[in-house]
Image (tube, rainbow, N blue to C red):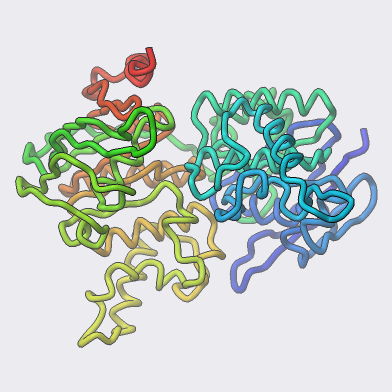
Length: 504
């Protein structure tokens, strides 16, 4: 069978960083071809070349036995290639329907915008994803998971026969992932070829026909999914075996660092009235406390309340080392010793127009300044300490943050938190879109910080991850605290039962 895509000796250089180096492989018509590799392996760069986001590269790209070089994404779309980006690419000020058909709006013969037709078409696309998102809802009002579904609907609207999916499930709940799988199955029955990037082994081994592994920008191997194992793929990705992380069970200092009493967050205009209701918890020094729950359960809202970043002032009490505190701004929480890594890295975690250095030190400028003037030497020393401690792959502290891979951007955000010397670290789904090797590094970092006495609260949409890292797990369901489990008690079944308790 002739390949539908042939990648021949493709390379790409960003400054001193060689993102891709002489990569070659083929994709056959109608297959789901997974591309795997650690953060920084070159996966997203290659997909941007295939989809016209990057037009200047070395080597050749063949499509249906003809050489192509797209000048932009519109060229790629006209050739039948569309992409669902890992980093959301939506205009927050516009409606869902306007985003789905941006640049391809429906108009009458007089050129007048046909809003009803676009709303109807958007509703049909969203119905394929079994979601009740309103086509007229502003994207800015949607959570990350719903925004991801809008991105997917946008790609489906193009009716391309080659679809690139870059971490499409990174922000989706289990039920939303199941819906996406059904959509993928339907697309494949219609002959659509799918290039699929994911760090989740279970996804790849459920969906893929073949798997191509990249490492450090170079092609490693293409294998049939039926002829390999997750362990073998992990070895190809990192060049070594990845052992399952086994949490060291150590004696924890019992001192309570953070406590909430009947913490509630109002939800004006909603029938439920509350995003959180009467949540009481204790977090001990040196403890990693996991927060589980389905999308909409209130995981992110809980962390935002603790960090002074909630949309409305919370009710109830927050105590830091026994002292009642009330935060109306994140700066107050940071002064009290709380730091937070947000779920939505692109929108809430990064300053895209700034360098790596500026992103890491932005919350600690007073520590690297004298009389209000930044001491560049002290600042560079502080930045390099975090780059080295977290193994950030970058062209240097002056590289733009947007040139880094998603996982390395996340490490920079964590480095920023570390420079504030927090007592409590809030991690909201910190490994979303992060590869297996980087996940192991982050797990090790959490354990190291906890062993040094830091108190950590972590949320995750992946239950096995919470079971791996947590000393205790609290479960939220529709804003209510419905379960608490020690490490020895916690299982996926009992957590899911608690997570659905409010709906039963």
